[in-house]
Image (cartoon, one colour):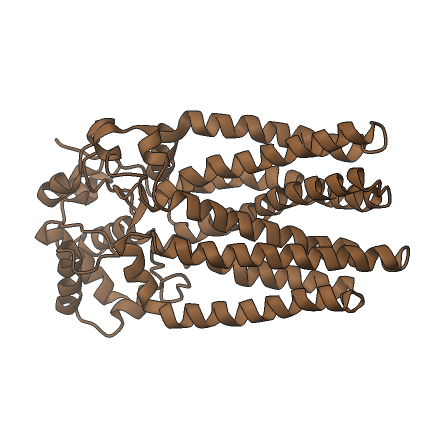
Length: 445
């Protein structure tokens, strides 16, 4: 019997597996983005301290370094494996595609990361124990290692949106997968946000120095304001460029909320710019409590919203525009010896072609139709939609509420025929479509 290489289903009620992966990833990205921006800021401050003989900057750098050590490298190292766990459970074929395409890229990135971890400890603990020139060289190498991790990871993340070049499908080459039209705008977009975050967090630390050294506190808060404005300007510029490099399916999803997204970005830009200008012109107005609140606002409204948007625009794919978000391979990749599974599923169906299906559900009958329909809907839809009436993440209830079985069948056939560019084109046998529609119509939506 022809089978597809599907893994057992990981299902998370109410929210869905993709939402859990997104939350874990966003938390980790918060720590990693802070570390790269801070590494560049460290190099800037160390350069200034050495060239201008500013020994008063070193205590600030040490406080920033201690924060960075705990916040980015301890917490970041804990949440990093969390991504692997949730991604492997929620999207095993997606993470497999990344590993098989970029195993040596990832191995290289880990070398840079190990250097970062050692480097941040050395920066903090040897700051007063080595000469200033050696310390400056260490900060330079630390910054280069941090930016190196970014550059390597961005090529992998960009591949998740779409491969670097169409030649990848023929060659399977890592370079063809890595270098694409959106790799570099994506890289500088994130780099700008990292710079901005380094300045925003820097204000928390500088504002806490008001009592012990008001003049230095004001000077550093002002500098952090300039750093934040620079990072914000880079972010905006490359965000516009990045949006112009996305595939058609991404623009189709973006179009749904385009006006609201643009309006929210304008409002956030104005709010953030006002905050940065106040830091420059009136640094004494920036108290630790205010700076801490702004860190939270920028992270939630900037990072979380941005990551949600990127994850949404990647649909219906999870990697390389050949693996659907429901783990089904949708096209041939000759260079990797990968074949599309859509013809097998159109002929055999998910229940017959998937290896881990319980024996009593392989054939749909009148007695098991609802149970089979539930399993089919979870296999085909739960990576993008929450299925319960109380679902929170792209709830199915808002899509089919009030529809009867025939209306739902019409939608399912439309999806299978490619009527919705942001949803997987999955043509299933009549009896499986019937079972799915029957189960969805029976739900109290």
